[in-house]
Length: 342
Ligand code: PBG
Ligand code: ZN
Image 1 (cartoon, rainbow, N blue to C red):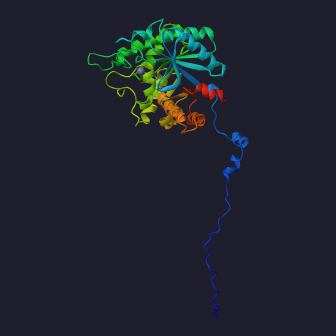
Image 2 (cartoon, helix red, strand yellow; image 1 turned 135 degrees about the vertical axis):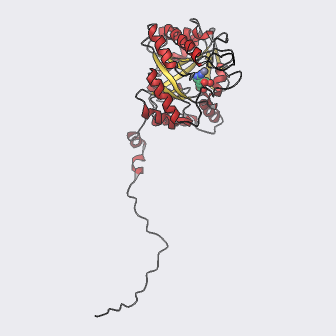
């Protein structure tokens, strides 16, 4: 056996500079300029996706800005028609109406008043703008003296089942006024079925139900409650609205409402709950709406007014995030501002 004894080679000095490989993938190629970015955009907010909330008050010629919601007003029916026309001219398909009645009482009787602000606004809107979709929020809290979303029992707890009768009557009253879509926002159990049955029995089988199926007990409704003077006089809404800790339960709520006859289900609020939108979207075969609430609006407006964020960019980012999560439509106080940019 021969042995080859190799002479010791001089060792190359280890380099301190690592050899950096050329990237195999370059996602930046598709981000080079705006036409390229537009070509590969996965989601877009269409004006047709936006619904604008409006607050109707009694009287005429009324237009009062809501303190915590700059750019949002309490308006009488005549002014609502003007604003709805402006929204419609921008291509916004629909509005959702909230009513502040003349008087509030324990029975929420304003909810079924044929000459209540929402009923009058709906009739006026359908006359002036027949193509505009008129949605009406359906809940007792804007009409009860105590600000709760239902009728109270002797112990001042919400009586779920008596409230169903009230909601059913409210839905019929709104449909009779010309509302195209009723949107129950109360979170009582069984209300979608009660509303569907009542509407059908009274000849309103064409009236759709957009249910606030997944509505969380949220701090992001604060400015709305100022606007609707609907802060509960005592207690809170945690016995009916959902715990922000829960997502599986959201799927249960959405499936129940679909089974009861909801045409569209909604998740509310938007920003803290986009994971819930995604889950609900995967579980139901009806359109999914999301509500970008008053508190979410107020935060952006406040920071925008201080120059701390770029408001239009922030708004567009929020809206496209809602679409990315799977929302088919977005209820937002920014509807007209966003539509004007499209
Ligand atoms: C009524 C209702 C509320 C909102 C919509 N419908 C308030 C609440 O549940 O307290 C909130 C809307 C918003 O904050 O923009 N139940
Ligand atoms: Zn309510």
